[in-house]
Length: 486
Length: 94
Image (tube, rainbow over all chains, first blue to last red; front, side):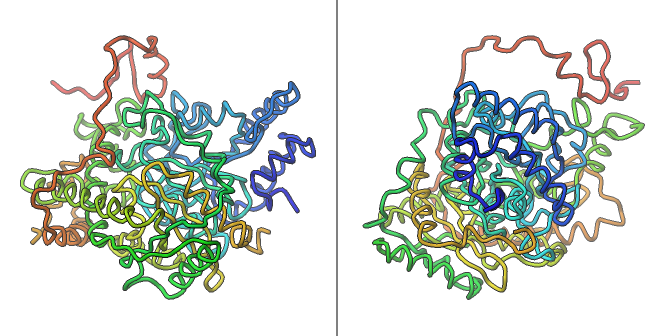
């Protein structure tokens, strides 16, 4: 088996038993990036020099007797995480030359664990999108079908993993941005409970929804990476206090007796038959392993999409007001006055979808509309959370599709933002409620991966990772690779 | 229910420019998006408190003491224009 076909845990064993050094492993992935990334454009910035220096340092630490599963392991960072030594663009012209003065806490923690940064991967601009088509640095293609979108916003992360151009990656999930690209590209990714992973240095889109998380081939890999990413950080004012649970030791627990809720609203109109069949096949496999299935109801599901597209743009319009051409980021040439500088800098720096969300946000927050839209959406948000609270009285985890269909064609939905938003219906409720959810590969439809998600109660990541791991022990969807990149 | 969006007004609120050529197309998309929100009105939320944060967290406060060294020069390295430790912008008052 070649290195790019191995899981992170398998690669860690190779490093540990000295079959390969971190420098060699890093060079292996850098070579693959050179060879293959032209086909999919998953990286915005490749960082070979930094990677080899970090790899050499990791090898030295190992030679000095240090051990650690992540020591010397290469990874790709979503270009939303600030990195002190590498440009952080957030896939925007606004930040095309932005050199952050500090590392994101996530970057800092993974650096400390000895991980090696291969580069920064593509995304929708400011994480606003579901296809990675809204990037100022070109679209990323789905390795399973180069005409298809990889999903988004963490599409670069998912595509790089699927093509074997990184063993693991970071992502962020505001409305599905880890889970949906994971599903579209046939990889695994977990969106942790809101507040589990520090948002410090993670460029803000919608602060009450944004959450970073790991993406990898397997749930087991995600568990190890999440262990290093999560934790209280006083620099993030909304970071959850206290210890994080142990994500790893329960992975091998049996799912016997587990109650799996199937929300009837997730299997209704709009769900493609292939995705429905794949989701039910996952339920059947887990049932075979001793879990029981229960129908549950999340009655306000259809209200989640409009509530999200009020709340997220409202927060975005506020967050993105910081891009004013004064302290950092793009400034227009020869501004005639201050106002001209603000307006032209922003109009030149932001892409169409970002501008749309800023304007929608400004609208729903404006006098006369605030109560009807913004406050109303926040009330609906509580109803959505309550739906989950009620459902978890009857089940331990919830199983459902990630998206109504597999990946669609590049360009298919770019002309109609509302059609794009509708594809987020199954992922958005989780963000509004702040719950954890893991996406995992569940099979294929016409050559394209299909993903399912398991949603858990607050801070139940160990259970989600355990169930996903048990499913992956019995199946092999997650280790498939697209033929062109195998 | 939703009114037609005044594109120039929301652009101004967002400090963005929308050219006259774009107004119709931008307005059409914004109105389609805001049209999605109409279904919120049909949901009964009587007595439901607005939820700003998933865990209903309160903002954590810290002691009001200096925790960072003076790094303004370092931070200003990435600014478009600075002079004598100040951010330069176009003249505001003639």
